[in-house]
Length: 473
Length: 99
Image 1 (cartoon, chains in turn orange, purple):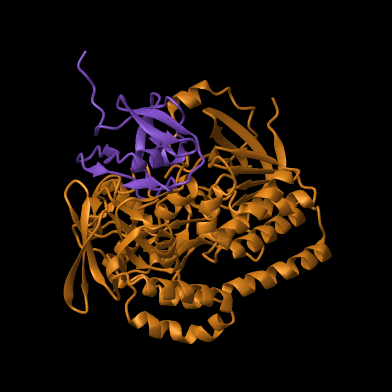
Image 2 (spheres, rainbow over the protein chains, first blue to last red):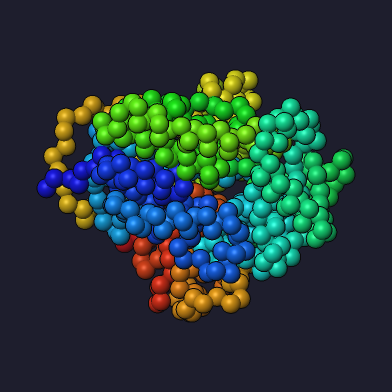
């Protein structure tokens, strides 16, 4: 039986993926949009089609903007697969995935990976205890389930999302026992040269200023330039300890929300074997792209926060540009139309980028976070400590993959999603090499664990075209 | 550890956790339903038996793994709770009984 065949497949239905799919469908491309979630929105607009009005109001106009995208998506002439996990992509861009417990496949001439961002891990001693979550997780609980923390909450870390979650929880009536910012004082000086450009993004700055003002008015205990965070507790987290201006401090609470920014989710792009570069400003990996989102592999593009962190509105413009690139590549539009349609999108990208260098500098994670104490668990799945990673470097491991072989870090169910960045950075410090040289975990299919029963029950795939032999290392 | 905001219009349902019937709301993820019901921890790690609960709620951390209707290692944050769903919480590494 022939596989369903498309001009364009888009993996990820957040703002970038939706915008890409809408643009492609509007140009007449046969388009397939896939997402692991039950509906569109990604994380930023999670559950936009199902959230209660009271919850949507609490989340504000930025969240409600997603409703317009979802509405246009529902009316667009394209195929969608929700609850669909794509776990393999062949050399000819044949997708293999699982949906509703069965395996499906589809072929596409062009692929756009729009899998967004993940929160940077904040490995501090005690962070594996129940009762420690990412700040974004609290926001997801609110979006997806209309749920809020029931006890006292301490938020710790840095970044716009930390402040946003704090204000949203405040509005929801949650008791905030403390806000512990970890950005070193020096960050303000590093951010200053970028302030003029940021002033050109007054809307974003004003939003941030309003959040700060409201949190101050609520008289939440506010700590700054905190260092050496550690979480206390035996069966669950009970307190956060840190140093502030040389003094030891301790805050008790029921829930601890950590956040140190978001980074591109490169799990799919790594599995696709496209080239990545280390971004020293955002302290994360990102795929190497041209101005149409084209990666080092023909036919594969990336758009949205998965390309580089620039926010939801930027993701829409980037998704549309990638779709234009794909449409041009399959011959649907010519050079002139491509340039004409791209112009306003490039202007939008530039406008939304203006605030970024300022934010990246202001909220740069502190050095102590990136080089945690020996006893800190870095690989949560296999419980490998920072000290063990450093020991691997001393024994001669030159990068994360050798470290994986000898310590099992990265071998657990999360497949290195949580520990990858930290392991690269710890090794970089231990080997005194730049992260670009140290490298990252090699990611192999399946993209997420697939039950054997699901594979066994699937019908044999259609005869595959001749392909390159798999590399054996 | 969590609670539903008052005024939710979503239908109340029940599901079972290790044989105990617990309330939930239609549309909750299994993770949200467990957190709202105060179930902590979700699992114990295979390596050391350490207690774990969700970190990310978006399918990245794999610390919310539970058994759903006989399916093992399901990410509770990626699964919607359904009436009568049978959830079992993990107990560390799997054991093989001698024949």
